[in-house]
Amino acid sequence: MSRRLANLTLDNLEDLPRTCRRCVFWELDPKSREVAEESGDPELEKEAWVSATLLDWGSCGKVAYVDSLPAGYVLYAPPVHVPRSLAFPTSPVSGDAVLMMTARILPDFRGGGLGRMLVQGAAKDLSRRGVRAIEAFGRMSVDDDDEDHGRSRRSSCVVPADYLLAVGFKTVRPHHRFPRLRLDLKTAASWREDVEVALERLLGSMSPEPAFRPV
Image (tube, rainbow, N blue to C red; front, side):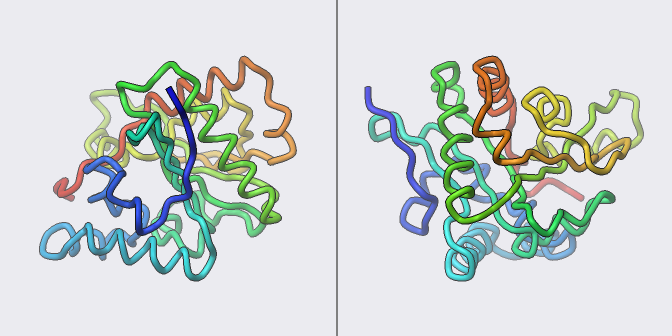
């Protein structure tokens, strides 16, 4: 069984799971996303975002393959390329950091170390390009009776804050719903095995937001 990582490009964009392929939660601001999902074409918007980001900045994600089958992915980009990042109460992302948008290992491939492989691949890519840190908006747990619970489900592709803390991220701006956290890439290079296991659990737990959710 062979495993490999590939940069996300227009050529392999269709290898993303359908839910992610049609999801533009991060790629558009909230209003534009609503329009795209109600009367536009989210897949076309996703393709346009990947194309523009590749041209302006370069690689914006990794896709993991087991043999010839896509098994997982991670997406990241500078905040200037991620309109949704401005809609969070703990914005903006630091100027020296890249935003980790979302990531996932598909169910059939969990438990084999692909999460570690994906995150390490992203960290190496960003380090080579002179990036100092990765930041992410964490999602705090919300009780079932919370009046905002519906909105929390709609932002299910936001990384759970507890997992980010478990793998070495530090809170740089607290918030009761969406704290902003940071991981220095020099720290990432020296992760211990237990941290790598936590990363596997992180990526295995995440699911991208389904398209066409009512707002």
